[in-house]
Image (cartoon, rainbow, N blue to C red; front, side, top):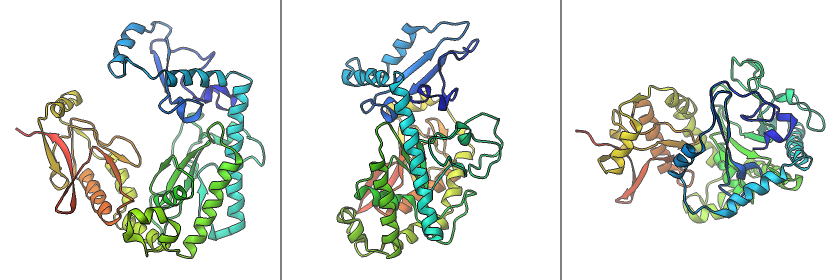
Length: 389
C-alpha cells in the first residue's frame, strides 16, 4: 500500500496515477493497509480500475462482497483506512515512506558492518543485492532483479520485471545454500526467532533458514538496533552452547524436556533432521509435483459442509481427494485445494511433519487443514477427504 506514494517504486504497483488503462481488463488490487501503514489490524482495501471499454459494476461487486463479510462492520477499522490514506498525502506521506526506506538501508548497512567486524565467525546475512549505497536510500536500480544474477537465483527475468523492496528484509541463517544443499552444521531460523521472541523481538514470518521483517512506518533505529544486539547475543550464547533453561526460560517452562539441552545442541539436532530428510528439496518438489484435480473445488467443499467425508490418517492419504485447503507454514502457500488428489510426494512431506512434531514439540510444523487428535497419549494426524463410494 506504500508503493504509490514514492517515486522509488514508480510503476511497481498495480494501480497508479497517470498509468494507462488496459483495453478490456478491469484491474483489482488488494492492499493490506495494516501491514505497512497506520491501519488497525485487519484493515485492508480493494482498489479497482476500469478498462478502456468496460465500467466497473458496483452493484454486482457489492453483492459478491457481502457474501463474505459482515453487515455489521467494525467502523474503527474503516476509519483507520481513512487515517492511513490521509497520512500518505504529500509531502508528509512521501517523507514517511522515505524514512522507512532509509531505516531499512541503515539496518542493512549495520548488518554488513557487523559482518566485517566478526569476519567468518558471523553467520547472519540480509538477503539482497551485493552493492548498497554508502548513505541515503540510493537508487531503485540497485534493487532491480536482473537476469541470472547470483544473489537472487531466479534465472531468466525480463528487464524491469520486478524489484526487491528494501523495506522487506529477509535474514538468512546458516545451514542451507541457495541451490538447496545443506552444510555440515546449521542454525534453523525457528530457533533464532524463538530466542528473539523471548527477548522482546517478534518476527513477521519464519522459514527453514530465514526470517522476514518489515520496516513499516514508525520503525526507528532504536527498534531495529535492539534486534541487531539480540542477534549478537544469540551468537555468544550459541558459541557457549548455553543451556536452554538460561536463554529460553519461558519456552523451557512449557517444554521441560529441553531444560538441559544446549542452544548449539538443539540447533544441530533440528538441522540434522532437516538434512537427513532433505526437507528444502522436498518442500520444493511437493509444490512442483503433479496436482491431479478429481472434482470441482466447490463440489469437494460441499462434501465437507454436508459431512460426506472420511477423516483419513496420513499413512492412508495417497490417492484420496481432499475436501479442505491444505496449507503448510512455511511458506504459507496452499498446497492442495478441495477436489485435488494426494500424491506420494505430498504424503511423504506430511509424514516428515508428523515425525518432526513428535521429536521437537514447541517447534511444530504448522499445516492448515491437518486435523490433530490425541489417543493413548499420542498425537495422530488426519485430513478430511471426500468419502469414497
